[in-house]
Length: 282
Image (cartoon, rainbow, N blue to C red; front, side, top):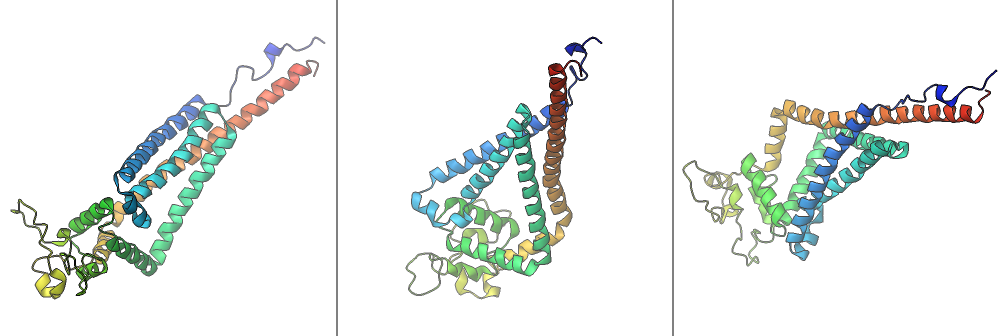
């Protein structure tokens, strides 16, 4: 019986690895890899533009720092996906899939816990907002973020406008030498359609007034209640956003697992062919 030629071995020109799956996963990760780099660049630039003492003062509520952290995590995860798919590396693909699964489960858990323990979640949000109020003047990015939120939700402070007394510049105590004593930021003020010039001093002395008097000039409702009401009236929008975040993650997990299984099958095929080349009489 003549030995079987190597050219006739099964699977010699066949590959289990789909080029469509491989490059789809690669470009999928490349897109988010670029987005991560942009996020890191913006975060680093914003951080460098601040004064050193301001950057250290409020790390827990620093938007620039948050952007850097999220960007770095996304960069590392998508880097594993990019290189793993391009080099057909099972270890990197599995790392990518596991990390993405963990992120997805953490998001799902946070959403469920936030819904079930809404009172505790509200308390945590209140704590974050109060901490942000304390550091309002320490960080320009944080200041702009708070002003944006108060303008968009027509609110002032966490529970009420008097929460601004927690800030050392807006504190209502007699010992406070600041010119902004007992005031609130201009973003709390009522806005009129015909108002062409913003009066940044419109919140002067508003904390000394009662709710009815202050309500003639500023928004007296706290941002926490406004935020909760907005969440209740925009559940479908929030569901759409959650679905929009979940779909790319699930697609990435699915594609990485498909590609990893295809690579394993290809390795088995190559091992089979190599074994029969070494033993042509088999």
